[in-house]
Length: 266
Image 1 (spheres, rainbow, N blue to C red):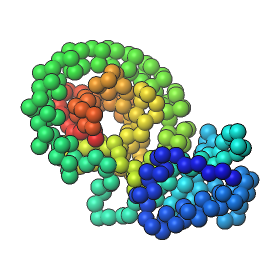
Image 2: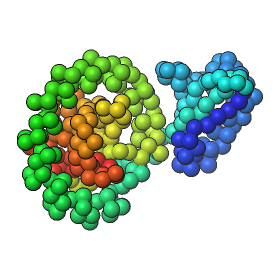
Image 3: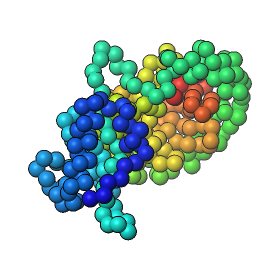
Image 4: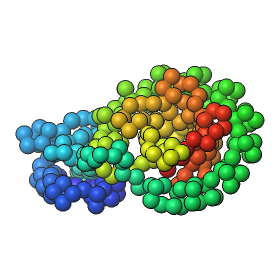
C-alpha cells in the first residue's frame, strides 16, 4: 500500500529516540507490504480507532497515529503523528518549544516590551481598551456572546464537540499526541505563573475555544476568543476567571478578573 507522511510527523522524527525511529521504520515497511485489512487485523499490530477515521497504534512506549484515504493510484496510508512517553524526572517541568526560563526574549523580567509594568499598552490599568471593567465588549458579564453560560456553542456541557469527555481527540488521556506527559515533542503552549512555573497547557478545540488542562491532564476550563488580542478565561463551571492579552506572536499576558497580572501564556 502506498505510504504518505504529514509534515508534522516528519518534524517529530527528530524528537524520537534512535530505537523509536527504528520501530517506526519497521512499521512503515509493514505498511508498504500490506493492505488495510491486514494492517488493522494483524496479530503483530493492534490498531484502535480514535474517531473520524484516525487510528492509533501502540508500539512499545510509542504511539503512531494514521488514517486511510484514496487517490487516483488507489488506497494509501497517511501517517499523521508519532508520540512517545516523556521520561520521568524529579521536576514537573515539561518540554516547551518556547521556554521563558531559557529564552530571555520570552521573559518579561528581561524583555520590557512584554512587561506591563513598563509597557503600559499591555497594562489594563492604563489601557482601558483591554480592561473589561471599562470595555464591556471584553466583559462576559455584559457581552453574553462570549459567555459560555449564555452562548452554548462555547459551553462544553452543551457542545460535545468541544467536550473532552465526549470528543476523545481533545482528551489528552486518550489522545497522547496532545499530552505533554506522553508526547515529548508536544512543546506547548503552556500557562505559566508569575514565577514562570508551568501550571497548565492549551489544546485548540476550534477557532473560538481552547481547552485548558492541568499538567496531569485534568480539564480545568477554556479560553474564549474575544478578538485578535484578547481571550476570556473560564473555569470548568463556566465561571469567568480572567483574561489573556496578546503581547506579541509568542507571548500573551495573563490577568485575573480584577486586572492583576498573574502570568504568561507561551
